[in-house]
Amino acid sequence: MKFEFQNPTHLVFGAGTLSKLGEVVSSYGKKALLVTGSGSVRRNGTLEKAVSSLNAAGISVAECSGVEPNPRLSTVERGAEIALSESCDVVIALGGGSVMDAAKVMAAALFYKGDLWNMMAGQENRILPSQALSVVAVPTLAATGSEMNGGAVITNEKTTVKSFVSARCLYPKAAIVDPELTASVPQDQTAYGICDLITHVTESYFNGVDGTPLQDRFAEGVILTAMEWGPRAVADGNDIEARSQVQWASVVALNGWVQAGTASPFPVHMIEHTLSAHHDIPHGAGLAVVNPAWMRFASRTRPERFATFASRIFGIPMQNPEDARAVAEGIDRFEAFLRSIGCPTRLSETGIGEKLLERYATDTLLVARDSEGRLPGRPPMSKEDIADVLRSAL
Image 1 (spheres, rainbow, N blue to C red):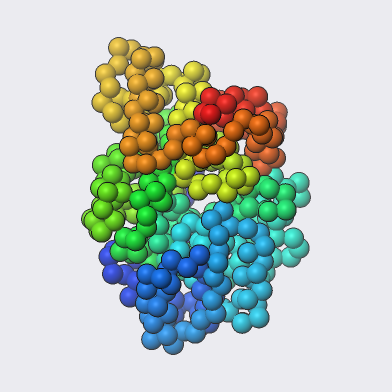
Image 2: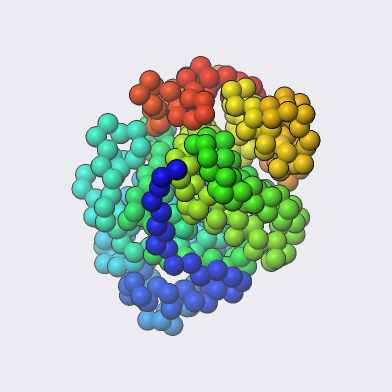
């Protein structure tokens, strides 16, 4: 096991910490591009509180609103134009994962030469961004963990391809993580966020290199925490203790701690990105469909790993290290948990049929593929494998 790890994001966590926004942002600039989504932060008063805190610290604001779920490249370009014309020197992302991802790329766009899409995975002559305005992230949803990592996922609406970029300059300088901001999130979106954060750690748990026992325990801890507190957060949005535990699990799931040294690809995410690029379904909902189906596929070649998952997460006894019964029961119980909190587990529940399965497989491989043209993972997946997994989830 060899790795390097550094996370430069200053994290301010806890109920009521939105009040610190102006104080934190003042270290990075005086004119902020404030990036928001469809309007929920305006309706529930979060935007007003944020702007008040900023103004009290002497920070003026130019707003870029209307970032959509599965954020579009054109929206990123629009935000960058506002930042340039308004002479912004800092970017604030106030919203969910889509808002944070879009804000990061907007911040880099001001310094990037050429087509912004060229920074995304899958491009033949890809050039990563090396400079960006400072970003301060204020998540209003526990899901992606984008507030404490250097990644962003963007959809090119012209080509119907959803891809990602990860670069050091995209790490937020600071994150204000206030669980009270998630209290108004609807039950379905809360559930989708729980699935998303769990999938972040199952990706490395099942696809990472061998010999990472501490990281395995980190992953199991995130899963168990989400499964314990997630249903409470879904049932009662005002349960701030549950919201806090789920939000912290979301941060830890993708801030690099769990994945350190695992060298893990993210095949489930790559497949889902294609689905949401084509159909604009919520990312977490798509993951809830794809992950159990992928687990059944991958468990055929690595049953001992999935038996361990069944034992440690659900307490299912094993007759041997590769117990097929335990493997099947563990995956079934994981899928049942997702259903119990309100996630779809079949493509038909999201309105997706079998007509374009081969197209989805092809598009997935446009973004991520190994030297043999397969989707990286354990095991690597051919185009036919991807289509078969999706077919099994119909």
